[in-house]
Each structure stands twice: as C-alpha cells, then as structure tokens.
Image (cartoon, rainbow, N blue to C red):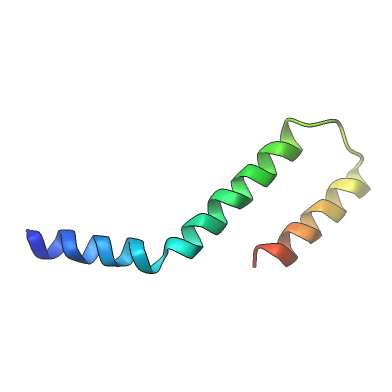
Length: 55
C-alpha cells in the first residue's frame, strides 16, 4: 500500500505545472462565462487566445 501512495505523490509532483495550468485555464473561463456579454467574434478571438496560452 505505501508504494501506491508514493507513486501517486510522485505523479502529483511531476504534473504540478500541468495541474496549475488547468486551474488557471478554469479561472480564465470563469471570468469569461460570468463577465460581460460578448459577441460571437469576440468569443472566437478569446478562444483562439486561450488555445495559444494553454496548449
């Protein structure tokens, strides 16, 4: 059992940057979803920008 815990901890440490990136992406999407209304063109531009910042 301790081996599985160690493996999970190591995977968490190794993926820390990825996890942080996912949390930042979630925050960005929340700001857009609950912010002011946007046109379809503005949303397309925002999505393209998100794709560039969070590959």
